Amino acid sequence: MGSILSVKNLSVSLTGQKVLQNISFDLEKGESLAIIGPNGAGKTVLFRTLLGFHQYSGEIKWQPGVKIGYVPQKIDFDRYLPLSLGDFLLAKANILRLSQKEAEKHLPTVGFSREMLSHSLGTLSFGQFQKALIAFALIGDPDILLLDEATLGVDAPYETYIYEIIYELQSKHGLTIMLISHEFEIVYKYTSKVLCLNKEMLCFGSPAEAITEKNLAELYKEGKHYHHHHQ
Amino acid sequence: MLNSLLFNLSPAIFLAFAAGMIGVFALMRRMSLAADAISHIALPGLGLAFLYKIDPLIGGAATLLVGAFLIWKIEGKTNIPTETIIGVIFSLSLALGSLITPQEDLIEALFGGIGSFSMLSFAITTLITLGIIAAILALKNKFILQMISPDLASVTGLKSNRLNLYFLLLFALTVILGLRFLGTLLMGALIIIPAAVAKNWSWNISSMLIVSSIIGALSVIAGFAIGDYFNMNIGPTIIVFAGILFFASLFFKR
Image (cartoon, rainbow over all chains, first blue to last red; front, side, top):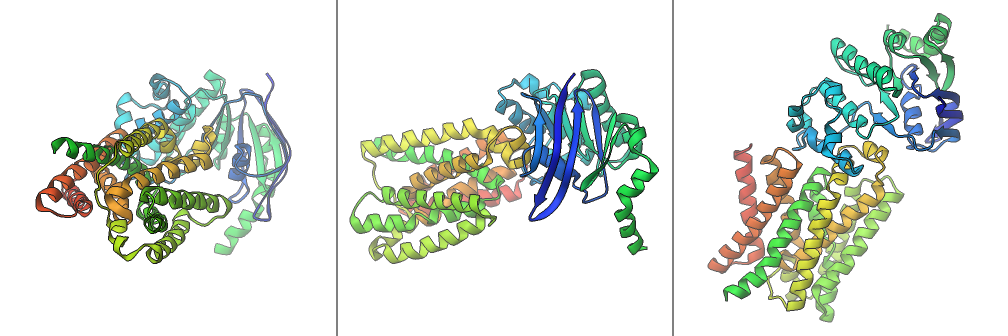
């Protein structure tokens, strides 16, 4: 086992504003890390920086040759276009020069049958679409999966189901997982490490170590003020 | 007679296939209006060509490539939306082109006209058109992914900027080759309309590409036949026929 990802003193500014400051952590192979924090804490920015979308200072060191799967929070496209799930999955397989079989390999993982391939992407429900994004991310057998609120807007039973999928990928297939979540229950149940983020890193450790009342109060204090205003 | 008709018609049919395919991606990238607009960029070049008596296609090609390059550069350097950039460049081109083009040639530059082909220009047109079709098929999956999500495309290792350039170049080439048949004002329509019809009549990307190409080719054949029979201008006839298919596709949606 070695670090699959090592981050040191990472800072990011977007349009002149500091969005992330001095983030440092290591992620071991096969671990699962949850990133928690209030809205606007920079969680998505952290992901996107790790993926190379933003300029940064500090150090991001991926294990050489690492394959990353990314499940974004949402994607915007015209849902009335004649694009099938098959078009979507095959496009990636084809670009990576993989066979059609590889494109379809992970359908059972997310509970899809082959028949789903002919379904139009635009007609998939929210939950189905998230599963499609996971199936897409798994093409090419990534070493690590980055999930940005994979269950935002998904019904509760579905949500558990999606987390079961993710958990199984980690426990059975040794995939390293990084996820952004708001649900402490889920974080407790499914992840081995927690990073509390609100522009700075406020805690890092096992769920029991990190999710303490003191840390949460610190982490969400701005959020509480915000709530107060509305009451 | 029939031979010479086939000789002149076949490059137009190949071109319609290419235009139908490139139109699918133009539509998906929400660049339909740009499809029309970008073809206008060729007008100053056509005007210069008429003025100095060189092949209009060379003049059109030159300004179109300059235009495409300008758009790509501005797109990369600023946050101005592509369609805004194209909007500025195209209206400017149309204005400049109208000033430059000799009055007696303006109609042909705007609406096209089917001249006869020399063996050389037949070969060049056909080869480039087949090249465009091959390139679109080879880049199909990259275009699809980039269109669904630029982020996922980037994580999959695609270079967005380069793909945009490839797309614009294929697009520009298709337009250049089509100018001879349809002119600067109508060429965009052969890219937009078949794709718009195909959107209503297909269920996945492959079917959309096929339907769009066939609609394009069918419009060209029908335009040639009807225009020839009733002695009407062929370019506009092609587009009117395609337009009728478009309205039919609205009423008989899949």
